[in-house]
Structures are given as C-alpha cells and as structure tokens.
Image 1 (cartoon, rainbow, N blue to C red):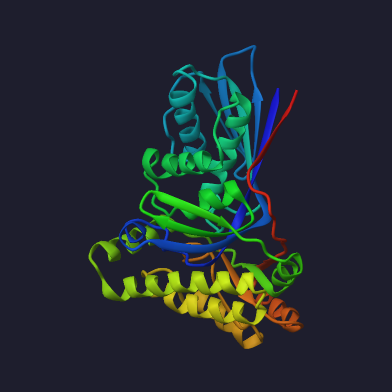
Image 2: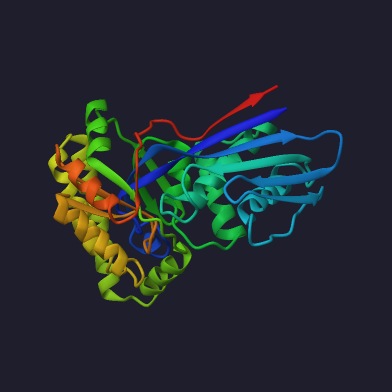
Length: 342
C-alpha cells in the first residue's frame, strides 16, 4: 500500500513574529498569511515482508535505514521525520513499531523562510493520519505538529506555520497563549490573482538558521526590551491592516503595509537583515517596488516585493541581475491533503 500527502507552504504577509512565545502569551498575536502552490510532499510505502524503517530525503539525496523499533534515535539530519514517527507510535499505535519506507521532498529549499520545517512535519503527519486512519481534525493535526517541533524536538519557532499548512487558504490567525484561532477569509478570486501577479517572490539563494534569530527575539521579550516589543506591537497592527486590505480588495494598501512591516520587523532582533538583504531590498524599491519584506524569521531565504501594474517586469529584471531566482506561484485554498493507493 502507498500513502501520499502534501501540504502547502505559506507567505506570512503581516504580523509575523507575534505568534512566538512569550510575546503571544503576554500580549496576544495576530498574523495574516496565505498558502501558495508550492508543497512539502510525503510518500509512505508499507512493508510487510521485513521489519525495517527507511527514510529517503529527495532534497539531500540521502537514505537512512533503521531496525524496526518503537523509538528511533535522533541523528541531527532527519529529526523531523523521526520525531513524527516516535510520537505517532507512542501516542496512537500502543508503542508498537511500524515497518515502512518514507520519502519526503519539498518544492523549495530548507531554511528558505516559507515555513519549510513545520510544513514538512504537517505533511509527514498527514501521511500517518491517512495510513492509520487516526481520528484527528485540522486543529488536532496542527497542534500536534507544533508540539512535536517545539516540545519533542526542542526547535524554536512560532505557531502560524503548522496551522497555515494544515488549513490552507488566506487566514487571519490569532494567538492567545496555547490557544490558536484560525479565521478563514473569503477573498475575491480576481483580487487573489492580481496579488499573485503583483507580489514577487524572490529567492536570494541564501539560507539561514531561523532558530537563532527567533531565540534572540524570545530573549528580547523576556528581558522586556522596549524597542523590540514596540516593534511587535506595530507588526500586530499591520496584520489587522492587511486583513482589511484583503477583505476590501484594496490593492494599493498592500505595498505600504509590507514596507512598514519590514521597518518594524528589523527592530525585533539582530540578524533579521544584513547588507545582502538590504541591497536586495533597495534594488527592488529603486526598480519600482512599493514595499516588501523578508519571508519568515529573516537572515536569508525568500523575500517578497509588491509592485503595481506594469512595474513587475522592471523589478523582476533588477532582482534577477543580483543572481537570485524569481519563483512563480499561485495562491491556493487547500491545505493538507492525503490519499491512499491500494
């Protein structure tokens, strides 16, 4: 039997960072995000003739094989895959080991700022849910994915990515301590097509360790550093402004909100920007972009820039001359999806 699943990556359009504890615990967070037609994919092939567990990562072209055990040791390379397996066996399979080959692949590089780790966890978890027919709804899957990353694997990060990948679509999310509320937005198709045309997704061909930046952000909140906290307050306000712009189909506001968000985001922690990123941003603005921001925690990966009407082509040309890659995409209304081939 073969089980497949896919989960979409997201664009964090406003409010990013306010979903990270302890800020969200103390002040509450808000984010406007939207999933796009780029995915993390998982295939499980069940094995009945031998007792073994094999993980194959297409992205790094490596295979890892283990004896069939109830708990596998983390190895620093495929901890996400192992973490999901360990939790599923412990919580849902009565501590009985499973035998299978699990293959994962992603449409974007690891650490590129589109929520890659969390989306991959959701995809892997979705495949196990489909295989074992686990009675888990969308909120259950997203919360479990978060718990595996943040608690089992001790990986620093926020809460939005797991929920975006699971639910899909354009969502306004609110965070109150451990409570997450996902508000799906009904957006005109013509508006989404226009935003997908105007909003350029640019891969800088650099990666970063988001955990280090997020840890610095967490530290700033814990020590009540006024400047980063005030920046996060402003970012939360931008999430509400972006939601209003989407609901009212106010294209002209998108670029302005992105630009203001970028200015505030850089105040949250050191390492969010650097000379390379600043040069990319200035190049896009000088070519005709209205505003933009880095995707994810910062430090590298994807950036997004908003243009209007015919300005897209000049901005794309200027960015490509810097050596990066403009990635085409469309917005998608669907989140995690899994199916079985028998």
